[in-house]
Picture 1 (cartoon, helix red, strand yellow):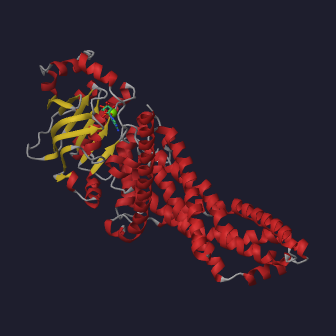
Picture 2: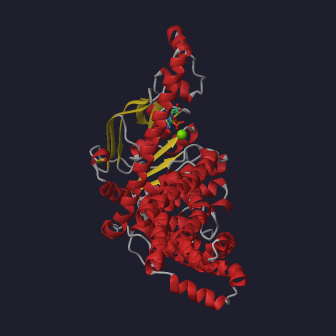
Picture 3: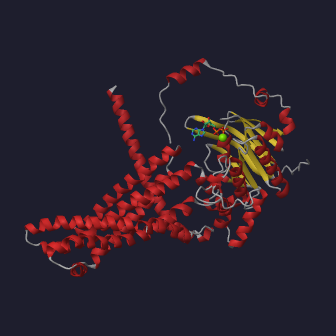
Length: 267
Length: 275
Ligand SMILES: Nc1ncnc2c1ncn2[C@@H]1O[C@H](COP(=O)(O)OP(=O)(O)O)[C@@H](O)[C@H]1O
Ligand SMILES: [Mg+2]
């Protein structure tokens, strides 16, 4: 009996692992197709539509601006509070400006943007594609000779690739302003000086680190959302599961990739 | 009504020995059939006989375990994606549920194949879309969303979308399922009208006898994944095969229970699930 249970467990674990590997393979394939269609689509009389990209950019990017601004400002304030308190112990609280600016641009701007986009747009993408699978709309596309990846995935991936770095810039700025809101008091500084100092201490490298992360996170979230959507089987319940899966998986990938990025760029 | 007789050589669809298995179950077991240019072929069978599965394989949406499907003279399994996408410009499909894009209006739905696969200006697209909507009596409804349509209207919109590219071959899954008799008769009229006006070859999948007899040039009767008979309406009506007669007379199927088989089903281990 025990042996049987064990063998069941082993077979379940190995099946899950196989599934993980094949899911990852599917992500890579989708990524490849995202490069393929913009280049070869016109030749196959299936160009990627600019309008579709713009529609996605509005939904992903523009509509996310207010909430992202509020979130990152809050993060900036929290960072400033913690850093002022800690750095005070060493008598170097003036370094708060530097610490907030670097932490926001290198790390938290991109991370907060990714968290927001995964929850807001990655899940929406999974739900949209998933419900199209359920209602046979994907099959309808296929029998019309419209490639679903070209039509649905590629515009989303391009839109994420453009909008995520753009949003990271906003996130960086709002985070720094948030930091300033708190620390100008304890530091006895005007907001203007605070922001000018922040800009002075930042290097191009700091900002680029966050932007390149943003690019990679954005593409990851789009790919995971689409692949979760396409994997939907069995009705509305399946759509709900896929949506959850898209959020959990893309956040997992984002944080792992973030750690690797940070490691290789700073250690 | 005069029925056009096509030359036997002009096959638009040729299916040979098609075998489909899901896991260990054999769903289609050696299906062979041909469809001539310009005819209305009805694939008929009870629920669960494998009609939808057959349709999905005819459309090249899934890869069969064996056999070949030739559509418009091309072997579906040997075509590249590009070739397949291009061939599909000549094939229209109307799904059972309609499968209209819920985020688009009726007009946008019908226009989509034109917009995505043809280099046409907006004006031409609008005119061609309205022409087809006119044909299915949906003129003036182009700005409605699919959620605002009745069941019959959804079917007609899906039909308009299926024929908007003037395909040579149209598939129609369960045109009358879930519709009242009047609406379903109207759809049958529409199918005949289309064939007579444009000479389109039409393949209809249905379990409705009246509808099948009304529209068909020939009928293929499917049962448990096998073809019982393919013939003209009259020949099928007079077919002596017991299973065909049972289907036509709606006699309940006899449940034959094989004792060994029964025991095996009860005792066998759960199969590994294959997604
Ligand atoms: N994806 C699938 N996996 C396993 N079995 C399936 C699948 N699709 C259909 N079947 C089985 O194949 C048989 C035929 O189904 P279907 O083609 O939908 O019949 P019909 O359309 O004639 O009602 C049914 O017994 C059904 O349970
Ligand atoms: Mg069916």
